[in-house]
Amino acid sequence: MTDKRDEAETNDIPPGALALDQQLCFAVYSAAHAMNRTYKPLLDPYGLTYPQYIVLMALWEEDGRTVKALGETLGLDSGTLSPLLKRLEAAGHIRRARDKADERQVLITLTDKGKAMQGSAIGILKAIRQATGCTLESVRSLTGELQQLTARLEAAARHDTAA
Image (tube, rainbow, N blue to C red):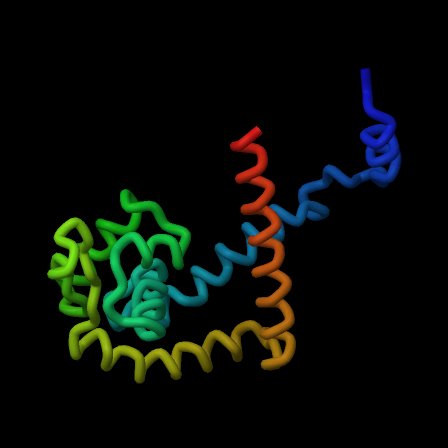
């Protein structure tokens, strides 16, 4: 038995709606890949990958985060984050140390090298802005829309998991 609302929503779907170039998910996926490809030559001289770079960006905003807090901010699980942190530590960008107040927690802090990298990030940001061809206003608008989309999708995923 079908719900009348499901039928109405299905009737609203235009022909060709399942075409790949009509899918929001594919547009976001393609844009993410293009963004990573654009960042790669900018980060290679520093020996960084994009995921390592976003770890540094999060620490520039708030140094001394726990691994758990960093993972929540970046949307990365510990299985993904731990190897990134290991490589950043080996490269001299961060330090990992047990929290003296709570030995169960590991604090991540920037080294002088990690802090200095922030100065180079300005040039990277300028190159990315130029590559996108977006104005500052359109970057802010698009970023806001994507953040709202992410929040709605995460809420839907939590709801589906709880159901």
